[in-house]
Length: 249
Length: 252
Image (cartoon, rainbow over all chains, first blue to last red; front, side):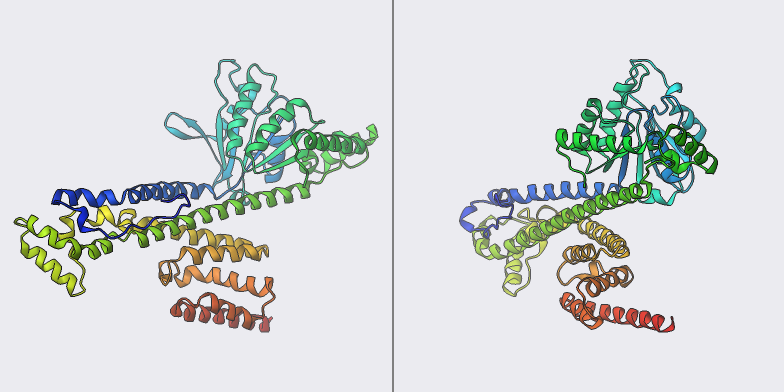
């Protein structure tokens, strides 16, 4: 293949290049080394395209933010169903992928791959108060919830733990989980309930590089007066614009 | 926005309202919930469309590459062409069972305009498996990709048609025509599979470009002029649908 990416054309075989049958047998494949490599490249490209095809189906919307900003509540409200536990304390301790399924079900990862668990078990296991608080625990658990909501045919939601949890080791584990989830997320909803801070900015900077779309929302506006809501919004937007160079659309 | 306010029942809302009034925060919290959900949908649709188009582009580039390879590396044709030139040089090398009879018959068939038999070419390591990219890559692989292009393009066109995004409809249609090998529409286009897409394309041309029914048909005719059978069949289908649509309008 030439530098422009075009296949070069070989001239017909010439007799003077062949002195014996062995020469001839060695000759033909040697004329076409590009063919072998081009075929291999095409097979690799085709395999990659075919593998990525089904994944291109449903966009993933990831919700991130500090703990108790209402990420799970927003997802529950959008779906009109209490699929995710929401509590007054630090609540979510695992990453949950909410996908479409013909009936309600929950799954977790085990050594043998995904394993179905009772939904009540999911509700218990995903809560921070029921998770081991050992700082040596390497990472948060992933869960998959399937529910028969029409909206989930078009979107998959990803609920993440708050990245500033107070339980031992929870913040670091949550950050690691968010980084991994952000790699495969298409839209990131950044949930605030206060003016944006340095900590928020550092997380936002990381996910802004990987997600295609970023939506910033100020939740819990019922706890603020009108003037405060406007001030927090204006301040956060100007900081994001100055620090990250992102403009609101 | 306030997810809590949004999901609250009447009693909970009344409680929030009273609490806010007591604190002097105003009666109802600022919330743009519908705008948020709408924005979320649009962002996801945008991402999905961009990704679908990127996958279609990659698949079409790959199909084009396969086509180039098939056309430029027709090794059998090159071997045929060169065979007569080097055949005399090879004659002394022939041993039983590759006796001179095999070579003579091969030369005769070449002189009579027939292809040199594979079994002769195989003596020189020229075999379908080792040289013909079409066979090495397998018809199955390209066919799989073509089928996926059509499936994805049909879905995109249907979704785009539903939200009046006619440019995407035309892009999807272009992907299908590019994925289709020249003069081989039967690779892709069964009537049942194709009917949905053609309807969207026709609507797109009429509504986006301001074509009349007749102009839309004429434009379709030009686009499909590569293959007369396809043209006849599809224009007939569009005509049938038009008649049906007009009949239903009259009834209404």
